[in-house]
Amino acid sequence: MSTPLTPRDIQRWYPSRWDQIAGNSAMIATCWDMLQNGPCNTLFTGPHRTGKTRTISLAVESLLCPNRTTTLDPCGVCASCRAVKEARKAHTGLYSVMTESGYSFVPIDCQTVTVEDLREVLRNADLENLRTVIYLDEVAALGRRGIETSLLKPIDESPCIWIASAITVNKPIKRGQAARVDGLSTQMQARFAVKVGTALPTIRELTQWVKDRCKEWEISIEQPELVLPALVKGSGHRVGYVVLALADAAARGRRLTPDQISRFNFGSPD
Ligand SMILES: [Zn+2]
Image 1 (cartoon, rainbow, N blue to C red):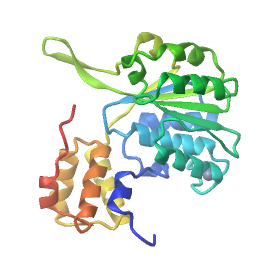
Image 2 (cartoon, helix red, strand yellow):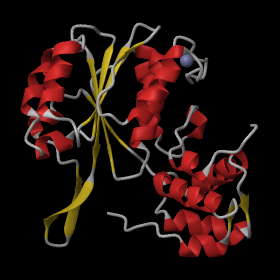
Image 3 (cartoon, helix red, strand yellow):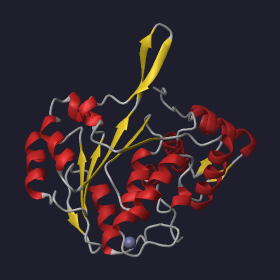
């Protein structure tokens, strides 16, 4: 690698290969099934920063890539792969691209999409096509915002593929007991044949992952016997928080030190 990623690049990093994902074995298995057998409506659930969006994004990039490798990784350089990368950066909420693989990809940010936007998607996206992939990021937000009704019928009846993610949060169910809930209506839940949750990496998996990324991103680890366990514990094993801590380390002289980790604010796990 010529120039190392900037702290900002690290913050917005997405995996380009399956071996760059820590934990999440069930999600990866679901994605590989999708790539080998064809996709169907799939819902990915899990807490904040546990790798939903990054894993789904790699799956979509690989699905659309006509030059996928034998290990199911996207080639990373073809027009489709570049288009998916652009769609990630665009953050416009709506983006449609017809790629050389014949797929069209329509990511929708359900937290910001408007009713008019949704109408436009229903009008313009080729819902009859098995190679149209519509991705609903944080799908529960549609219900919270009272605008999910217009999509229930199309998701149920159209031949195109709907992929969605939902954040789960702890909710008290009775005294002293809590359950993780995804906030979806039962109608929306019923629209997805396959449902799969995130799984946190083990201490060993995450430690190795941190070492690999630090090598790749040219971040030196000082006193690894102290720093690595502190980082794994502080992050609550959530890769999304680890990535932020590594972006912070990169911004502070590209050094991961006990001091930097003890000062880093991991936020409060929900
Ligand atoms: Zn490609």
